[in-house]
Image (cartoon, helix red, strand yellow):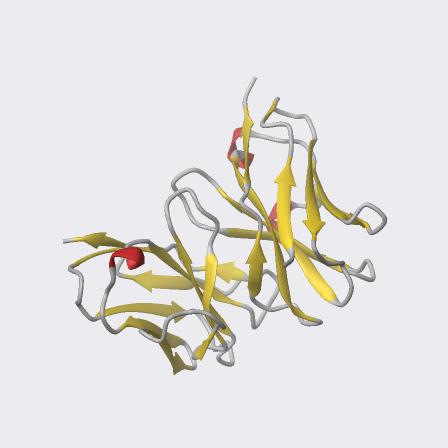
Length: 108
Length: 119
């Protein structure tokens, strides 16, 4: 299995902060990486796919970058709705497809 | 717009079989992959398996052949059967639709249904 490791596990930040979350894959995944946001009690929501393509309707303060085995999700100016847990997912291999363990963004 | 709604028993006993349904409204199954994903309480996401509208399937090997995903196009329903349940199968189960014609990321999710495995 391709292991996906996110850091940090928890992040404390304030409204307006720039926030960066890292996702590392145990092998190259050809930039086939997605990011999801999950608010408490809700289903995940797709933010970014192919490492850097913003899903339709997602605010432009979200951006993704990286290649090879290291990827980042950046929120340029944290808003109240952004306090949530974020997951990365590799879809280079569905044997199986795997998610990171999640990064919780908390209010500082 | 297309919406997904999971339904299931809520509580099942160990060693029994779980049967979940995902009803698709506002659209059809054609040309998409349909997927089951679960999330144990307080934990991360696990891909369980996916089905293409034609019927072909892929499963997470970690399930050790306990899972079967099927579709009833007449009812617009996706199903998951998971056999030989243990407490480790307690989770919120989500159905999701992926990208058009490609097994990749998941663009559309149901709200999820909590399944507790307990005697």
